[in-house]
Amino acid sequence: MKLPLSIFACLLLLCSCGEVREEITFHKDGSGTYDVSANTIPMMRQMMEATVQMTAPEGETMDSVAMAAKVEEMVWKDFPDKIDSVISLESDLTPDMRNDPEVMALFNKTTAYMKGSRQEGFIKTGVKFDFDNSEEFLSFMKMIEDKSQEEEQKNPLGKTKTELIVTPNSYVRTVAYTDRPDNDDESTALARMMLQDMSMLTVLNFPKKIDKVDLVHYKVVERSERSIILKFDMLKALEGDEKSEIRVTLK
Image 1 (cartoon, rainbow, N blue to C red):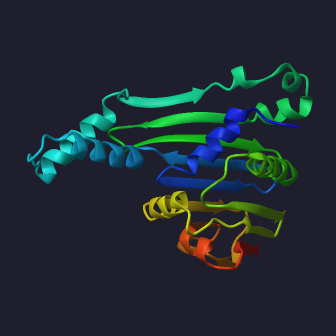
Image 2 (cartoon, rainbow, N blue to C red; image 1 turned 90 degrees about the vertical axis):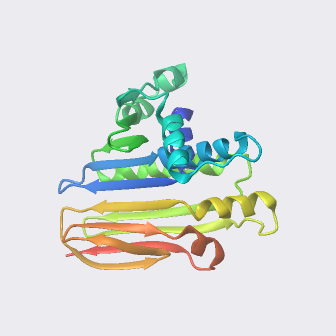
């Protein structure tokens, strides 16, 4: 069983952006939402700044205020005042997919979107999946995992395997490297450099109060009775031998 490629492509491409936010919400009846998005503006801002510097006439310098203003205009010039749109995935459905009720059930609960504005300071591109129970959530996440394992192109950050356990009283996610990157490889060095400017957040919302949280390669950014925001340190995960882990126990 396969979902349309663009859903997975969108999810995987988000990982190359500067600010990635993954939010998972569980309700009392087991239903919930999985929403992963990336603000593309910081990455575009960096690219435009580099462009301005490279195209400046030789010997000419631009003060920081003028540089910032020019970069902002370049970043936003092709965007409308406000974006709140759904990205259609219908064209990616093959006849086999349309005839598979399991695929269509998942497809109909998956939405790709783009939203934001200059006033808000972000343009988010994301994918949202609404699930009826934890089994459906696990099934969707497993297919994402399987698709990422199928990718033939070598990932400079290596390949990982994720294991998920979700019960009414716990959430456990463990990520281990199955193919660590070659530290001497030029593309790996470039990828590591990019990671220094990345922010990867995981937000977990539960119907019960949180009792205990154990983390490896994550740190708590914010915590309330039923929610927690975690920041992932990918560089530590790359350089260490331990598996990355989130283990949350509920009361």
